[in-house]
Length: 458
Image 1 (cartoon, rainbow, N blue to C red):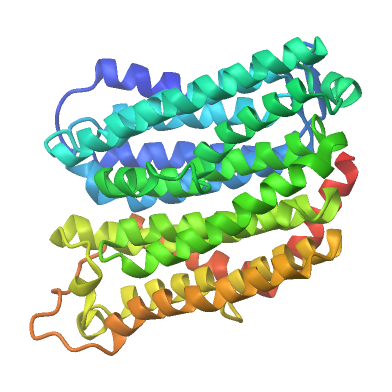
Image 2: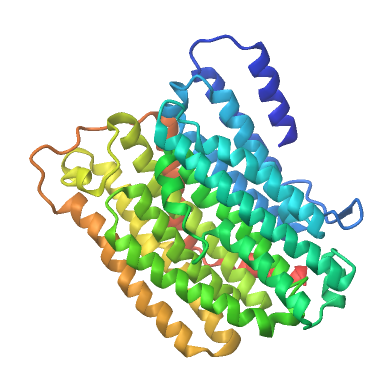
């Protein structure tokens, strides 16, 4: 990843203005090579003490993010082809991804925070990448301001935790952990930092505005890669550094889970802009992820990683359609998609499959993802009230997902959107996402493989 960033930097310094088709092709080739290399020469061990740790499960998590970035790059082809700062876009995006890799591999709070900042600061620049649009600058300003507060709160929590225990290593915290008030207060501040990054209620207020103002590829990156990386870190950290206070954080996470599901669903029903719609949809999905974490170490982490993989495919397929339509027509509202099936049959089916998966309708992979999350929540504690709330929220979510499908396939529109010409690379990106939705649900060995890696980690 670092090598690719330097290659792009040298290319930027030496390049001249002109057609970017060859540049985008070579970038996608480099990202494909990077993805393939992630499955070979895997090693397990530490570097720099506890600063950097890797094993097969961590490598898989990074490979999931690599796959997501490749699909986003393919889908952003038309937009980047006409953008004068395409190399800068990739340098910023891959720098954030590198920071996320450091976070995932960290076994030390300091390394985690450094990775978090490397991942977070370039994201504000990406949100402002539609340079001519005021709403893009507004999105970047809202993100950087709220992100600064969240990072400060998280860092202060880490400082208090060091004061309470004398260590910031995950293993050291696991041994020194206690239920004293200072330690619990420090954990609450760290949880608040996580809550902001994954858009859990009540730390979600930035999400819809940033999603709407940022370019569609950047919104996709926020929704899938940024949240996915934080979920991976959260699932790992809670069952290492904070495992001994699970009784305490269970109640906190349960409240965040219920609030995220309910508030996310209620606000998603009211949305007309598709990017805001998927923003509140993602908040609701985070509620289900937090439910899975409550289930326990092995089953909970396995269900969460499996769901993130499915969520990645589902959201990328949905945003892929929004991306090509927005780039061609500038339309992003649900009402604009009325009668969409008459003129764009293939894109309509891609969008429908993605929404079915996000809603958890069988036989799409989304059904199995939510099934394992709910099963994890049940198996860990037997809290059937929490499971009932989750099931009711799944029913509510059906309404607003099917509302979009109804607009596409059933509603009449005197002037439907014109046929959208899709280039090969965006089509490949959407094809990979749809294939992932179908295959991940059908092949049960995917979940079994993830579960096997999780068991080997502990």
